[in-house]
Image 1 (cartoon, helix red, strand yellow):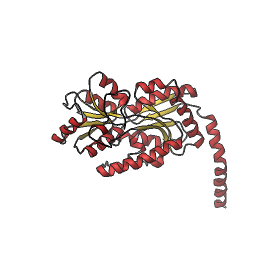
Image 2: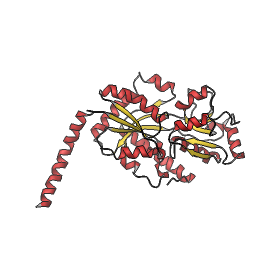
Image 3: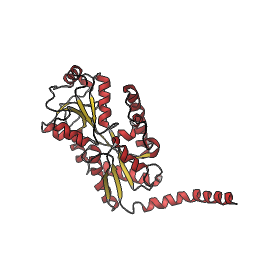
Image 4: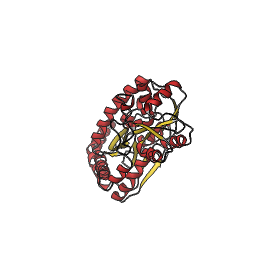
Length: 324
């Protein structure tokens, strides 16, 4: 009898679930939404969250709160999101660390491809190979020659293991056959601060956050990681045209959430955030920062992640990058 009642309850729950999910979506959002940025304030992920959050709050008439939870290359914040209630009220800015380069980690407390789901692509942006003025190299070719003459003596900063900065540099090291020493930070902002202060020698920093310091002369841009030159810095050549043929690394960013959020809520978020990202009102802000707005559907974001995961898993294996 007990088993029969349990079967009936499970059947009723399954029948009612779609209706409950629809009701949730119809009422969504009825309270504050939080966007977890899994890095310190001041980096590109934080910048993107702060560009989207006010517009989303305005659209929904609800607070959209940004919460910086840095550590473990972005995985501490992502673990919080993965384990949050699957109701659409906890979002995060996903980066290459969660969307494509997670295979370097052997002991994560969650499984990125199954415990997280992308909602929408926010933007993509190339990085710049930037050096402190004390580094004598003026071009990528000169930098490669310098690095080869001083193996392991030049330090580069990153936003953490598996971050876009880390992966762009490791790909460069592998393709240019140079030995650089990695210094991992809890976000791109503190790494950039140390580069400006001369505590590290170089970074592959995002165009949006590096640009003001390049223009002020505080750091020197040697090359851009995209296949084509960046309109914001047309005189800076690509790394591919500067002695490393075929090199390209263009970080992409998503709004993601934990798996299990009702499909109706995911579709609503994707549609509304995409409309914000692609609005004419936002265009000048993207252009000023050298960012390419994306948008689209959750399926399109998932496909981009799948393609990039395959690519970066090969790089991680080839370069033998492992983090416990």
